[in-house]
Amino acid sequence: MGRSGIMKIIFFGTPEYVIPILDSLHKAFKSTSGESPIVAVVTQSPKPSGRKQQLEYSAVDTWAHKNHVPIFFDAKEIVLKNIKADIGVLASFGAIIPDAVLKYFQYGILVIHPSLLPQFRWSSPVPAAIITNTNPTGVSIIKMDNKFDHGPIVTQFKEEIKEDDTYGTLRDRLFAKSADVLVGMLPAYIKGKINLKMQDDSKATFAGEIGKKDAFIPPELLWSVVGGQWSEKNNEWKIPFIKNYSLVPSAYSLDRFIRAMQPWPIAWTNVHLSSKNKVQITKKLKILKAHLKDLPATGYRLPATELVLDFVQLEGKNPVSWKQFLEGYPEANFSS
Image 1 (cartoon, rainbow, N blue to C red):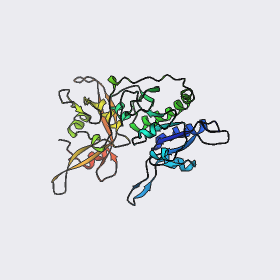
Image 2 (image 1 turned 90 degrees about the vertical axis):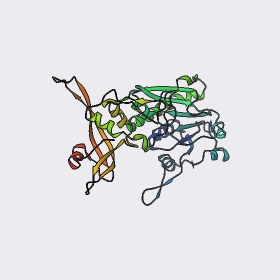
Image 3 (image 1 turned 60 degrees about the vertical axis):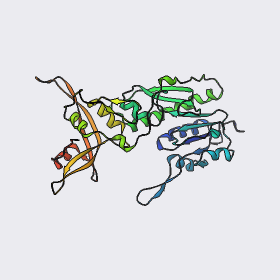
């Protein structure tokens, strides 16, 4: 602790959805004179963005400027400049922490990871939980060691996945709730009153980084499910970013996949259209929103559930309803 008696924290993070954690730490542990417990932040450096290539600063960078907190873009600077701190807190930082920095803090670095570790280690635990229907999911706060998402568990909490949750809504809720949990357990952790629990590596699962290619839905698969013609005889669908996982395509599983890709990278497929010269061209079609619809039993069909597309966006065009798309492109073909 510093001379003022307040906890001194260095925060490692980047995106907007971790700001509730910074706000909670700042409010809970600031001194009576208003001195912030956040003595520095380490975040991703600004990057050129948009047509004008203007520098875009991270949400954590912006927060630190507003609250007059020193900003670093390289974690090693913390050690080189001897920034005094008791503990590090890391949430969606996006870079490797060097060993010298890991060993720098008296109480280590606490990592906020949005899954019930050892489930879904690595970069994409929230989309993985939605796609695999792993419910409940939750958040683990672990003490970082020199292996990725491997350190001992300080505390965990569970969170139910709602039927309409997207990657974005679930992620934001998990990090917002983790802010209160972190603030509540930090004093006891600093005093050594929490027994850490080692992870069971034999139960570890993994969800790697997602790219735009991972959001692709094979067109024949999507169309067969939307058309209600899917058969269990068809092959399972391998999800590349979830290690050793394949999806059995259905209205339910595709609905989960589409929600797991929102707000980024957004699920997409290929559609074949006819040009003015009646030459077939292939375009990318984003699936912006879909929902499940229950179908009642009829004289020739059991009760069923179908996937209904709501809004789509054709490559180079504005978003439209699914009905508008079909009216505008009646020749659309989703065959492989």
